[in-house]
Image (cartoon, rainbow, N blue to C red; front, side):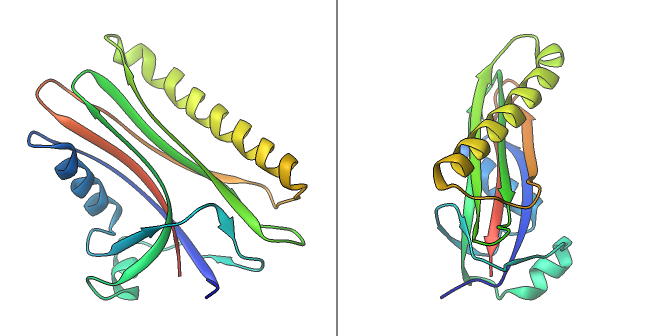
Amino acid sequence: MISRYYFVVSGSALSPVSPLNAFDGALKEAGIHNLNFVEVSSILPKGVTHLELNREEVASLFEPGEVVFAVQARGTGREGEYVSAGLMWGEGVETNGFVVEHQSPTTTSEIEAYTEEAKKELTDMLRSKFQEMARIRGFKTKAPKFTTAEIYVPKGMYGCALTFLVLC
């Protein structure tokens, strides 16, 4: 089984009930809430094609309950935390490509000042991981792309931020 296509989605949500419900809300925001996911590691097949899809197009590709494979970054948190998740990926030039993920909840009382710093730290960490993975494997990739999701979790809430690279 080799995937020929992939697409990337992200979402974030809050819930007063549980982290699971925040996760479900983030899946809905990303447009993938009616799918069953099998988490896979970080390899993009050689020659894979990136699809730019909107929520309606994603929904039309799959039947509700269908099992699909995805590389996932998911951060969950409680009140007072800034939760972020991100993926960076690169299609291979003469080989397969790969994906790296990072997620982290961070507690802070100065969220406005912290938000930009946290986004920069997330993208810096993704870039570092990506470069190291390329070095270890000896791969050259096309210019890497990335996506992130983040959310501040207010008092009395749970939060989830996620990014999924779905293989199909």
